[in-house]
Length: 318
Image (cartoon, rainbow, N blue to C red; front, side):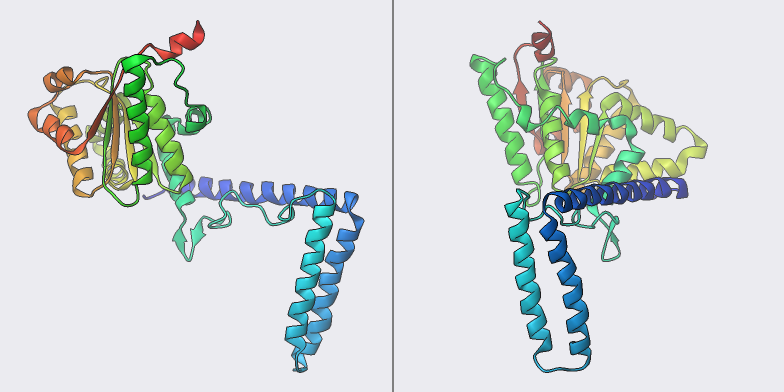
């Protein structure tokens, strides 16, 4: 996923801000520990003195100096842990903090972009997805069955089971999901739950409403000066770990969108890259709206899950 210089700088500023934030938090914690447990500061100072003392002995090739140093350091470390615990702090309270422990907020692991960097690219290029705000409230921890009864409840439970199975098998099997049914029954909610879980595991996710996706492709396709952005968009759509297309059927229906939709699904299928689709259309409406080859691709490579019931958003506002 290519970036302009300004986009790259924006991402680097995010990492700089994360490092500064975590350094401030750590400094506050250190001050808190020093105030509540003065003996901890003394133990920390002993570590520095120990390093100086044994450093000289190691440089002088004194026999057994390195082993003695390791033992003494281990004892001091244990002492510090005991002092923290005695003052009511967790053992790792003064460990360095990172938003991404994998790359330690640098964006790179062994010279390669970290998964968090790749997701920052996604977030930057597709700000209209608004995933960050959605995932704060739409996740498995807020999942509820209280608005479903009878057959509606069974349908929703099957959809939840398929969502969990999708997540568990994401790294080992190629699978696609299509949620369909009435408005407000939880299709987008489950898509967001899946997105949140996979983002947390370090996978890249692109989330688009159907109208926004095909609107963007149309804009770039018919603008002679936007070919580079079009190619970058295709590259992202085809290679991202997961693409979620919400509200299929809300896009303008014409030969261009149908062609783009089939190309998108076919390329993802050839690359064994998963897709999640949600739609308010019934199966019959899908068949009437889209070409035979699109419907064939959907039925042959997607698991369909029907979700029925009341409009949850209306129920919550009553």
